[in-house]
Image 1 (cartoon, rainbow, N blue to C red):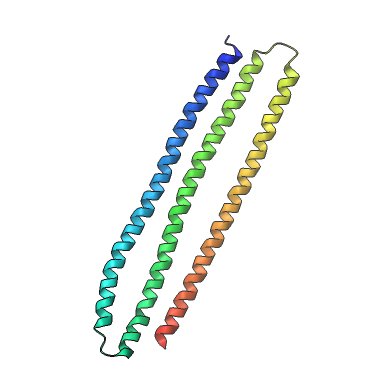
Image 2: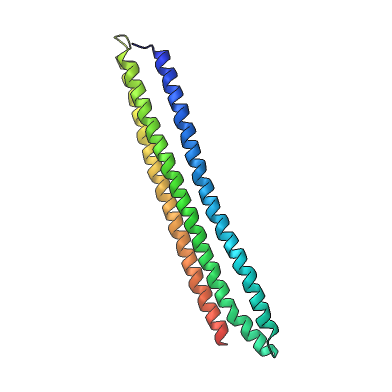
Length: 188
């Protein structure tokens, strides 16, 4: 039979090791997301450089101001479409990274919650008689805290999903408006 101090020490060590592993996993997910964003930005920069050269050559080959402005208007729509596509890709990467981070965090919290419950159960087994009511109160407090966290977690997840949905709606609306505007300017 081990003492409460030994149990506490073992639980603290196990918790530290779990937190360290979770931190490493969390950091790896953040770096993976940043790597995807960097790759996206580099590919956009390369494509933009090539496209700028091509556009400049087309504009300089215009025979008169009318053709110059027609070419400028015609080239505006693909730029708008690429900007919207970039925004969607960017939002997708951020959303995927956020989801991965939430998954890691929720798993860590669930594991920590189970460890606390297990620790309290072990400690209560070794407590002298007459202290059951104190530990019953302690268990109830832990249970209530866990229930509160679960409700907070659900509410936060719903709020983030609503924000992402609204942002996607704004991007779609902007895409439609700019495409419609660019189409009208080409027709003029």
